Length: 206
Image (cartoon, rainbow, N blue to C red; front, side, top):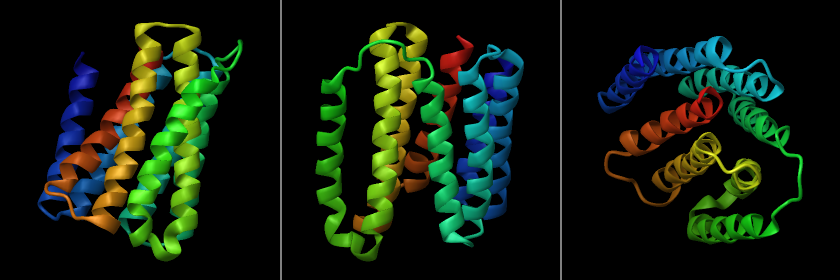
């Protein structure tokens, strides 16, 4: 309980830093929030492959967020975000041991195609990275959804919700940056980003 309270407060301070245009505060508490989640995984998560992949995803996310906050090495931090999603995806894929449900993939692809065409007029040279990120997020949500469908449980539902929210966070970031600035974007983007990580971690704790 206290650990989740600390994680929530740290995330709030990061969001407040973004609101107040204080990038140092936002970055420090963003990294601290992910670090607290990492400690939670290592101390309370099961000793299993999927836990280690989630831990790896958190470590890579901290690295990517640091680079992103300094606005340097765009290719490196983009690759780091993709690597973090690969780690999270692997944590779900290793839990699968049955038949694949294809309708879920079709549903996710349909939603992603609609989102892509909404953003297309503003993307210009960013089409390739956006498509790449979208593919990674779709397969992440698909993997988590497959785990939930194969083994329906509260924990697996939380994990799937986390991946969907992570996809929403990326979409909100893209809409705010490329299509139409959003009011209180720092709340919607940063808040959903932290919530997504927290739910993915919670899925292996409970």
